[in-house]
Image (cartoon, rainbow, N blue to C red):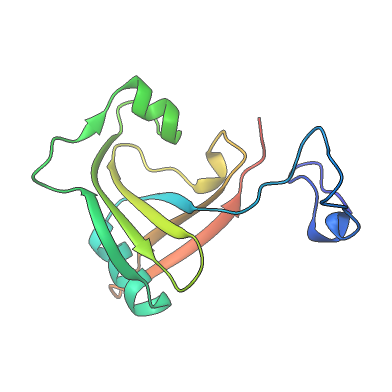
Length: 140
């Protein structure tokens, strides 16, 4: 059954003939997923220790100038005034890569994003553990 907020479900697509041309072809795969976090080191501990991820590379380090401005805010759905301070790419098994951006500025729940994407966020608990939550945001 299709949920109007999320689009077609797996059950809706089970009879989909992928060989037939359509006006809106399905994606062939996912190369990577991007998430924003307030603390890259806490997120790294979670992804490495909890999910067995491996760090592929750092695309932005503390030696680099932060990325900010209207274009960065638009591309990543960040609140006004937010800045990317660090960026790290992870590999998790055979699946898509995970690109993690450490941002400063207003932190808001993933469900407040304006794009139709799946977002994950991490938070450090009072005992210093890192927790992850995921949500799929509806297109607005």
